[in-house]
Amino acid sequence: MSQIQWPELVIFVLLFALVTVLGFVASRWKAGETLDHLDEWGLGGRKFGSWITWFLIGGDLYTAYTFVAVPALLFGAGAMGFFALPYTIIAYPIVFLPLLRLWSVSRSHGYVTPADFVKGRYGSPLLATLVAVTGIVATMPYIALQLVGLESVLRTLGFNAGGFLGHLPLLIAFIILAVYTYQSGLRAPALIAFVKDILIYIVILAAVVYLPSKLGGWESIFDKADAKFDATPSAADGIFLNANNQLQYATLAFGSALALFLYPHSVTGVLASRGRNVIKRNMSALPAYSLLLGLLALLGFAAIAAGTKAITNQATGRPDGNTIIPQLFADQFPSWFTGIAFAAIGIGALVPAAIMSIAAANLWTRNVYKEFLKKDATPKQEAKQAKLASLIVKFGAVAFILFIDPQFSIDLQLIGGVIILQTLPAVALSLYTRWFHIWGLVSGWVVGMGWGMILLYDIPNPATGKAHFGGSALPLDKLNLFGWQPFAGSQVQIYVGVVALAANLLVAVLVTLVARRLKVANGTDQTDNADYHVDEGDKNLRAVGVH
Image 1 (cartoon, rainbow, N blue to C red):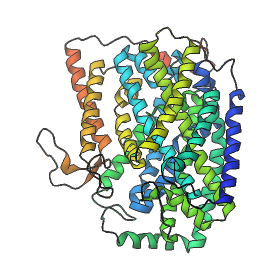
Image 2: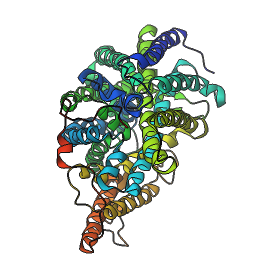
Image 3: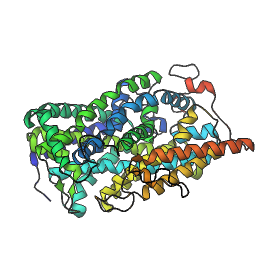
Image 4: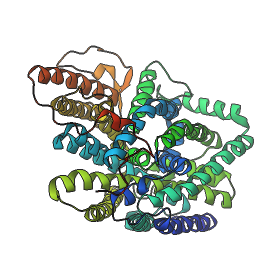
């Protein structure tokens, strides 16, 4: 155990205690008749307005890991880390109209998960199960990454012992999170998101004003960052992109934007909204977080100029790159402000972790438990099952950190983006057309998922000594189509997720053409065109909480 930073720890604990109280109080905030229904426990009664939704979705998408990893990536790799900025800008125009349709059809039929919609659209338990399992698998490492972000703060506070003792504060924090999420459902992270986002805005805006004045201005900061990268052997590092990583940058940003609202936790925040106008306002206003993210990313270069050093993880004996930003605050700011910054990042782990665990629990309950284990489950039994599942998901994420190298969780999250993209044809495209055949979508999923995993398996990471699953940047030279290498010798890189999605779509189209030619049955569509346009206040709109 390193020396405890007591002033910072006291402020951190006080603010953590505040959000804990809010988490328990949330069960009575905007409460419905009962929490024993997924509409109430898992979607907050489907009645969140513009401000609540803005804080909820923002708190969900801009996570603790984002606040430590993005600037840490700029610190280590330079301009490539800025991919998060265009990705979070272009995501909202892309999803603006599809999310309106998804909200309407879900509100009309009482769908709680994306897999519910797919089941209603195609009447296929197989396809719906594939979407549900994909969502759960892609979400689990994402939750684990929130722990990585929280642990970076705890390590900077002085909790840096190896073994179980070093993880004990993290375990305590997540036990508290698990209890109030179990009690309050989605209302807990929705209420806590107000505190988290306000703290984050205060901390980042103060940092981007104060740090440049202390470090000689932005010109000096960029000059020192440029000098550092010029002295490194890797041509991929630098404050500018190069000819080999520009395509990777563009496809990673585009692919990540497509994937963002396919994640179950993103859909959960949207479906909890009161109406279509709420979603419209949020898709217009959420890019304000991207401005914050851009300012935050620059702190990676500020850390270079300040000479910040990563803390050595006593459990692994290696420097923990995720501690760069917490350590920057500890080195450059007074203790009281550093405590606030640490609390902002720590609380920033709780909000998305809670929403993600709820989303995964909803998928398990509606699309596995109810579909295969207890078809006649009552709303109360569904809610009970979801609460229990949310606990299992959270402690499964803790197990990632306790028993697996955290770096492996980071690699899994890169894989998670490739995985969740394979649900785009079944979920996003099906909001507009039912042209694709069930077996086309299933075949496309299998091919996209399989090829994506094969490509990821063959990517090494020399920096960490990994021979496989070392990242998501694929040199075009490695693209091999049954022995044919269309880009032999090219070192230009591309994002694996986009390549796998292209294969998915191609196979889905070809199999659909064959199935239509053979006149294979394509399931039953429970939706009609009007369902995709309903809004709050519409006559005969399905009541919330109806089984």
